Image (tube, rainbow, N blue to C red; front, side, top):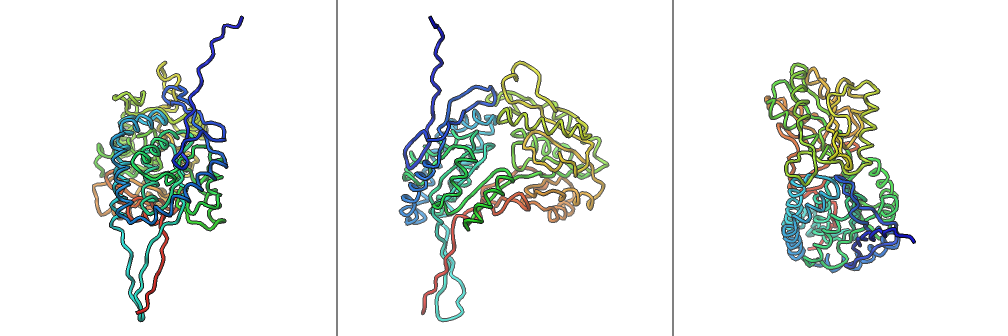
Length: 486
């Protein structure tokens, strides 16, 4: 007689299309907690027929939404913000259990997501057409109109804020949105979709389609009903999507990779700079597009600064993300751990000196989770592969520099240009260097200060277009010139 105990059925989590919940036609996605390796369930994934259904639902819902006046759309965005605030703790827990981000950071991001919806409610309520100077007997003006159906593709590192940064301005502008989250963090996006419905957003205006990039993502960006693409993620994927957008002649906005320099001059406030550099790379375990992953320290300060930084790095408290004492948690998946370690070991074989980290942490409490020690490498040139590749993990490359000219040449020697940090007591020099650095955001004597009011984006291979601020609304609108004869 067979006495084997049947395993309980794994929960299948549905996704959102046209206000209805379905499990999808593609293979389901496993939902795994990176802190423990626990299988949380399975998320239904969208196949081509699900993508088509979502586009058709969005097309049907969008005209009535676009016909509303700005203050009417703003009222619904405010209601969504209120729902996010009311359910902020549950949203934060969902994100933390999906990607391993410390709970305190997820709570802050839930608060920020609500603020993003409130900001774009205010923007669209006050957004105005422009009367242009006439050169004849007419009145001329430029009005701004929605594009239609927008595909928003977001990454796994900060879905709470990334989803809001795309959905809020796109909806404010009068578009319908199809949100395609990362395979690692679909439940956070699905929770946002549910809250939008509960806030009163008409069905079909926000659809959430989990699935792989190769299948669901490709079907979405190639669908003839999609009129605009907004993508945040890796540069290689961004290039592939850009080729599709170019072939289809539709607008696209890209926020891509980075290898951002942190620059410490000899006259810097050392303690402030140490904290800024430490958290600039190791917050969220380096899984941030603006992570300050290249550190340039002026030669006179280099030995003392690096020694102190290594000591602070070794003292970081690594642990479960829901533990309030944890400072840095796991990476988002076991695959991320293997990816980071492969790059670190290759750099060591190429001559990099390991100052700390470079391995999984010891101890039974880390045995099942996707943990990796914060790592600092030295002794290589700026053109080394580890200094030029976006690792998206807790790895800092430290390099000395001689003077301002040497520094600018090294800092700009990268295919990326997303962000930069400068630490110096000489404001004139800091300003001068900031203007010379090829990056979309430069911080002086601070790092990772971000605001929804201020445009964000990159130079070079770090992207095209801008998110946030009023400039973050414009990609979701198209300009129309109207002439009225007098």
